[in-house]
Length: 416
Ligand code: PLP
Image (cartoon, rainbow, N blue to C red):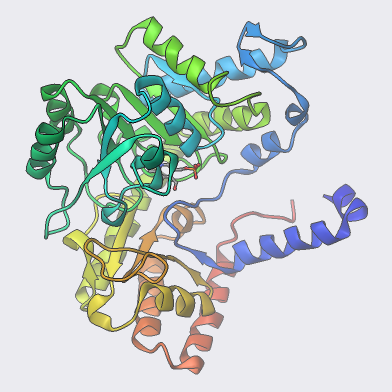
């Protein structure tokens, strides 16, 4: 760090400001987390210098003897952690992982069926502004009035339209998915069933959320959300043929990427190891407890939670009845150092840039040590702010309390 300070003071200063921001804010964005110091050290290591196009022992460059070992270790750990036969640890991101899998199994113009963006799906599950809705034809399934995935409707859509692929997984859905039923539906129309566990990978690794590896043809993920590793993507599979796995490998490299980011792959290997520890299991259990605890407090205080609760690390607050938009809530909470993101709710009448909801996730606050007591405090502060959005003094008062609480729970100890 001191080298950076000397060589590029302007940049160093901004990073220092970001460190302070992360320490002094309560992070409730469901897709964010704090990577361990070991993960960050690997990412800042000499591995960033190494080109290694290809796969272990089949590289297009010399000098890969060490990075081969690293990638093999990452693959072996990923397979063990997720009970998979196959892992590709090279995708630079979750979107890249999805792109590689879709382009392995589909031709352009093929029909895909994913969870609607406004019902909790991800851009890469068929959104018209994303490659998944541009290269492929996409249709969507959604949730019922109670906020749960409507499987019978999903089945009807699948049988009527016969998509080549059904995509499970989500960015903003707080319930357990019935992977078995989705595979059953996919089998009826001989479609591929793909599950994107980006959000819940940590919970799946800890066996606190059903592992879709036993049902899906392919599972994709990111490594930086509940899993708490470096930003990156991952592809897993089980019980498929060698040529199927080879086709996915070819679709990642050379199909859609060049050289793998070996520093990130090393960091992924570390994160997979961390996820095998008893501490990680405790951490994931507490994520669930905190999410349930917070959602219940909101419900008790007359807030509308989509599906009326949560079985994972996140939940959606529907603010339609509160006469405040998601955008306004995000802004006001931000003024008190509480960071959330506005989020569309099912059947939202507002545009995604305004939206009627906010998404709350507990992976980051739990990582810094928040338990029930702190989750309760945060929930009450949020409720006060949302109910008093024009009261600047109140918001300021809460901001001071937030900063004090954050001081008690440092994310990183920068003094060591
Ligand atoms: N899949 C899901 C379900 C996600 O929620 C996300 C990110 O939010 C992604 C994929 C994309 O990951 P990335 O941002 O690494 O491309």
